[in-house]
Length: 247
Ligand SMILES: Nc1ncnc2c1ncn2[C@@H]1O[C@H](COP(=O)(O)OP(=O)(O)OP(=O)(O)O)[C@@H](O)[C@H]1O
Ligand SMILES: [Mg+2]
Image 1 (tube, rainbow, N blue to C red):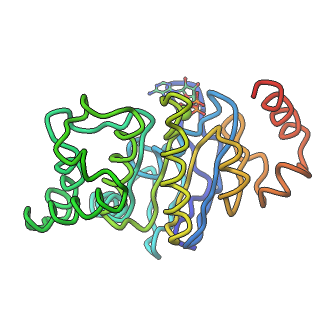
Image 2 (image 1 turned 120 degrees about the vertical axis):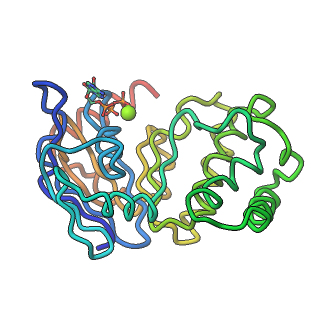
């Protein structure tokens, strides 16, 4: 197993938002997390990357055992160095070009020589068909292009796992497909991914496993066919039924 957490608990004040989550991702898996708003999906991803501090639980990442409530600084750096996160709202540096944004993590995170990093960024832009946008600032890019740059920025770091939190939910509908295409290609290239999304066609066609999350817990987990076509839990059936009515 590449990454697993056991008995992960997270409270905000008196409210317990993650109620003892056992979650794992194998090398090469694409795990899609679905579930209602407020159920704790974002909080789970943020805990996997130490953007939040857990109240209890353990993590095993690349054979390193980590106490989530009391992680060592070195553990936090280790996990961040080998993982990347893609957010809903791109989070690009506004005063840097597309190319500079992609190179940023290589230079400041990995200590790569600036020229080499910019070359890698430029090659990545070419392979995405975005070479013409290399010197554009985020304000000069469409939402879809910004998110594709955001994904490229994560990809060039060659992380063991990329965590995506609703990467298409801020986009105009006609731009969603371009971002999902990049993600599908990444998945086909063997990139390990954990994806929170409401894009059910992506979930059905690309995921190796679906996790249905509700009320701070994993309700069920299985192949797309099992979860979508033969859900074991009544709560999953209700959620999928409500989705079908709304989409
Ligand atoms: N920093 C915070 N302080 C207090 N409460 C928080 C904080 N972050 C999240 N919460 C609460 O934790 C719960 C889970 O939030 P979370 O954002 O993880 O849900 P989600 O499943 O990602 O929802 P959505 O689908 O709407 O993005 C919510 O009730 C939310 O209000
Ligand atoms: Mg969320």
